[in-house]
Length: 357
Image (cartoon, rainbow, N blue to C red):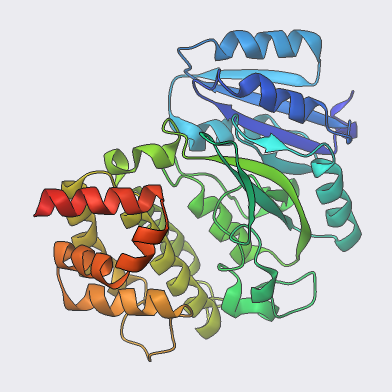
């Protein structure tokens, strides 16, 4: 197939993904949309991933392999973009699952609406139990108060809040990405936040697919979120770079600014919840309280500036106390929930409290 006939470039960063890689490649190569190229970027894998990729490339000429030293997923995605020739780009992970019609559904919606970005709903799968559940965090249509296609001009108050910063439930028009010089940060973690948030900010037309098209494997200890305490400042660095770029734009007005502040707070609180080290938790909390709250325009507003009531209370608590008092008070306030929910987050919080005491 000539490069002119490629509708979608599927870019997959691969790093020691042998456990799920074959399953994922089956999902990708079995897509009902056939006019695709699959660019797999081996990010210095030391397991059998390179052999799996070679077998796939031998059996399907649409598979292209790029090899680089380990520089994390952001650098791998950038390398894949540089080699891409499709009209649209998707950035899929090497351990997730994708419905057979995922690419066709998003491609057709983009073509129908002349969209810069398409965002789809998604599911989550627990790696240990295999339980799959639908969640609105990847596409919350209730937050979108404008007809599609929409943008920050028509939906400014939710432009960063109707979806997450993951790239794998989104399709991007390649010419739009190139026009706005969008790229991924080369960070160990949160390397996708800058790319996705700047893309949402600059997009003139955003469309959605309400049907869940992909399944994310959660609680994978080898994933980037599974090593959060080793790379604790990455979320801050990603938010800071995003803020520095878009805050100078005239489109970064009141509602869009508020949307960013809410997204930043949500990302910061989530990164605190994923810490596995009490020391890292304390240092990160102080960075957020001492620098990020003011820098990102989160503090100093009226009571309703933060959309979610629970996060509003967490912000007040963060502003009024130190790291470990914050953690202990959260556990006291939500003790009933932590007892009812057998979650990894609850277990980590309880362990941290035991260390502190």
